[in-house]
Image 1: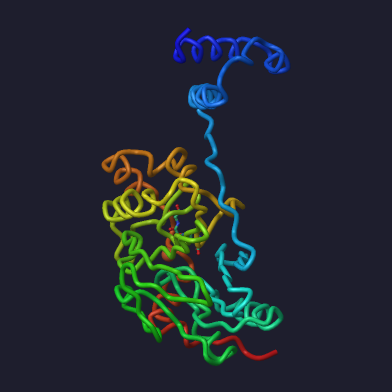
Image 2: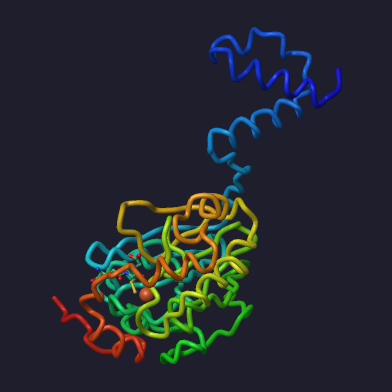
Length: 294
Ligand SMILES: N[C@@H](CCC(=O)N[C@@H](CSS)C(=O)NCC(=O)O)C(=O)O
Ligand SMILES: [Fe+2]
C-alpha cells in the first residue's frame, strides 16, 4: 500500500468512525507523520485552524497587558526581569498614574514610552509618564508628525535590557503607524493597523485602505504564523490573536484588495468622540490636559 493510499484509507476511517473508536481501529500501522497529515487534511475540510506550535515567552521576559475601559485601549508593559528595564506601548493619559505605580511596584525603570501612532480616540499617556517617571523617553514614528523625544523609522530598533523591539512601518490607518515586533519572543504589537478580526479604519487622519492592505499582507502576514499579535484596541473582549488566525479568519483582510477597499468605504462608523481633542494633544505628545492631583 502506498503512503498516499494509506492516508486516504486512514482519513476515510477517521471521518467515518465515531471518535471513541479511532484509537482501537486498524490505523496503528500508519506512520505518525502520515497521521499528522490526515489530521491537517480533515481540519482544513472542517475549516478548523491547525495551531502551529506556540513559542512561550522566555522566563526573563516580562509581559503585561493593561486596559483602559473608556477608550477600549490596550497598553503593554514589557520588561527585562534581570536588567529591570521596561517599555510601555500605547499608554493612555487617564491611566498614566496606574501604569507608573505598577512600574514602580515591580521595580522597573521605564526607559521608553512608545506610541504605535498618533491616536484619534484618546490622549496618549506618554507626556504625563515623562513627568511621573523622570528619565522616560517618549517615542513615536518620524512619519507620525507628532512630537516625541525619539523618532523611529522602518526597521529601527530600541533596546530594553537584552531585548530588542523593532519598529515595522505599517501605514494605512495613519501615515505613521508602526507595528512593534519583539522577534525573539514571537510577538508583535499592531496598534490600529490590524485589530482582532478587523483593522483600523481609514476614513480620517491619513487613512488609505490600499496602503493598509499592503501593510498587513506584506509586513504583518509575512511574520511567522505562530507570532502572537496584540492590537491597540478590541471592542468585543478579545485580547490576543496570531498571524495564522488572522490570515484565515479576518473578515476584511482575507478579501482581495478591491473587496477590502469596498468594505472599508462602507463601514459608516461615527467619528471617535475625542478626535478633536485627542489629535491636537497627541501631536504634542499628550503633554497637556494632565489630570489634576487628587
Ligand atoms: N467609538 C470609539 C471609536 C471607535 C473607532 O473608531 N476605533 C478606531 C480605532 S481608534 S482610532 C478604529 O479604527 N476602528 C475600526 C473598527 O472597525 O471599529 C470612540 O468614540 O472613541
Ligand atoms: Fe487610531
